Image 1 (tube, rainbow over the protein chains, first blue to last red):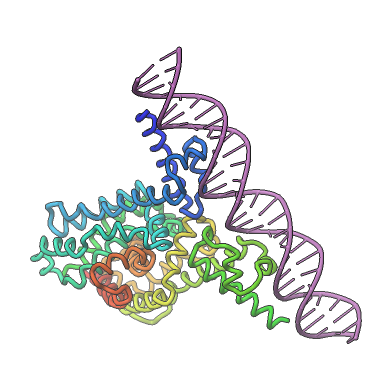
Image 2: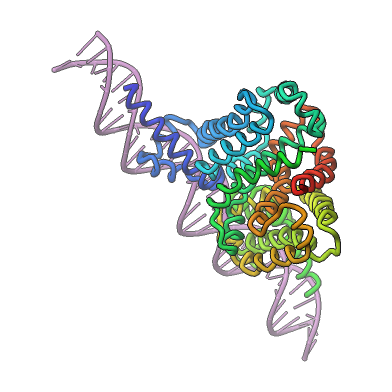
Length: 203
Length: 203
DNA sequence: ATGTAGATTAACCAATTGGTCAAATTTAAA
DNA sequence: TTTAAATTTGACCAATTGGTTAATCTACAT
């Protein structure tokens, strides 16, 4: 029953994703996942032997999904400024659809840094940054960006995009008091962030 | 035994802070806290009746500590540019000494947003932002900052400062592959961030 | 010295949790 | 139809966990 098996295994995986995103590894209960999937708890262990294994599968999927979202900018045939605008529009849009991903990932990685080590190991950041540096040599020259400040710039862009979601709980509290809706704020942020960064690197 | 009592209660509080920062509310074990404090587990419940109450005390202390760190910029008699430089230098220095605070706070707030609601309630953000806006009216005029974009700017500054610590687990993995030390990176970031933001708002 | 109130402990408890197992059910091949 | 393998389940288990309790200890006022 390959069809049915696939169905059950997927059902479990989706339920686990939901619960782990909501409660984290420590807070999640196998019984909750079973309920969410509408199956018996023993069946969880039949497909994924332990909680750790199940969590690892979910974590890896989410981590890959997020890391992948940082890459495609490289392949687009755009000017640097266009790439920056493209990045914020795409990345924030993605996070609007998956607002709990950042908090989940950051927390679990801080709790167990070794979890992401192997995923990071497969990415050649030196080559990645060299590539983007080559791609925009003349532009980086016009702007005041050196190979040394490139990581600072990249992390700043990630921060500007990701942080509001990681801090959603606090930010909603703050914005609420100023009568601003979180979603409106993030919608507005797509353009603000792009202009902000472009202005920051232009000289 | 007021002296001894104070000592024990403090010992418990410090041990709890340590363990909660390390493991979070869900991951922390009362027994771990007792061991860390070098006392019997029952004594924890003698001073703080439940895990929830103990955690609340620790959480409130940490949250207040962090929120307080965003405020003093307002009172300094500095130009806007000087304030921005002051903020990043002070704030990043503070986080360098307390690198686990951001991850802890963000995670716990996302898990239980109501926890920070009452603390946020006591802060008048409208007044706060109006005050800083009044303080630097002519400068905001020179820069391209309106009342509407002020929250975007503030959140961006917080993001640039806080995010690297919240993402420390990942960031160390990335920087390690490029042979950059996290502490060096953050040291360099104090100036980079200031120049970055100042350039971004200058027209 | 002695009684008393608060501080501290060891032992214990009920509930929860991740995990197991043998039995029952379903599925697909022979 | 039979049968063997795979899937699903309810009942169960041992370990862990937050919390309690009754007894002991300590310091101090009388």
